[in-house]
Amino acid sequence: MADILLRIDGEVKHPLDLTFSDLASMPAADQVPDVSRFHPQRHGDGVTLEALLARAEPTPAATYLTLHATADDFHASVPLAEVRGEGIVVYRLAGGALPVKNGGPIRFLIRNPAACQTDELDDCANVKFVDRIEFTAGKGRDNRPHDEAQHAKLHGA
Ligand SMILES: Nc1nc2c(c(=O)[nH]1)N[C@H]1C(S)=C(S)[C@@H](COP(=O)(O)O)O[C@H]1N2
Ligand SMILES: [Mo]
Image (cartoon, rainbow, N blue to C red; front, side, top):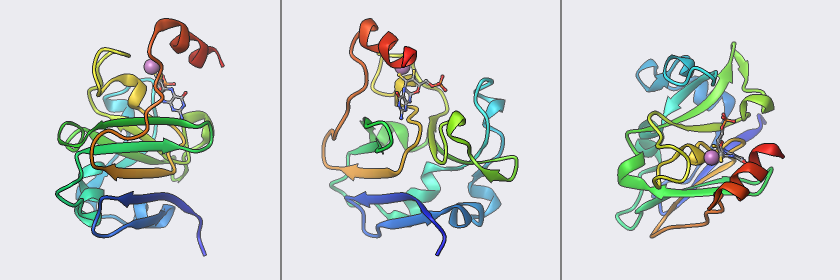
């Protein structure tokens, strides 16, 4: 069986386990080709968060989207109402898997993020290596940097 790259669970009617081909076979209307069009330093193709939401069907209790990267234990939790029209799940580069150096195999992107630490929907919430998107009732796990020292440490690592 193909590798499951992304699990969508928590406050949803239909938890999803998604492979590369699940994402690649989503309809053209759900695809977001070439994210460098709006994030010049970032690359790859994605699908809209909205399309994944339509499949998973969050319950009325879901108010936050919590993005988990097990690989480096990084987590961000953002308000669902604000992120739902802004989120893109990037999964492909040049027809193949999104490389780790690009935040792959799955990278979350916000179309118009605020500068780091200025808003819940900030650049820091563009989580790389995402393996789980959890819908939560209230804010979930979040270990984004709180100050410049933490932020610099993260970027220097
Ligand atoms: N998994 C993971 N995702 C992460 C981070 C991290 O340390 N680990 N850093 C975040 C922060 S603080 C920022 S500002 C952006 C930087 O993204 P870039 O490397 O594409 O510029 O990624 C975010 N995503
Ligand atoms: Mo950041």
